[in-house]
Image (spheres, rainbow, N blue to C red):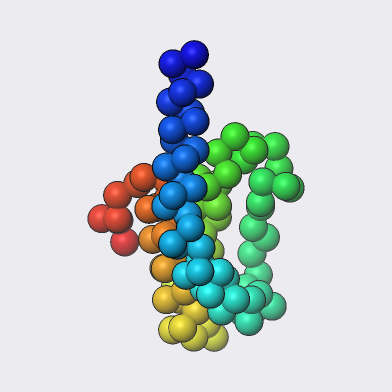
Length: 103
């Protein structure tokens, strides 16, 4: 029962963090929508692969890190998009409780 309480508390904590970040994440995702045809990288989401079903936010964070690496040196990708990717990464780290010291 204690593990269940801990999981419930963790879910509530994520939801409390999510609400204020949701607007920022959605805005950044809208910016990224404009570059989807320039990126030649297939990203996996929890609906596409079983490996992410238990840890959805960590999965998304992993995919954003991959996207960030893929676009870092691409001269066709505008700074606005790079900033959006960095913001999404920062917000996902905040939601998952990871530190922000990584670049």
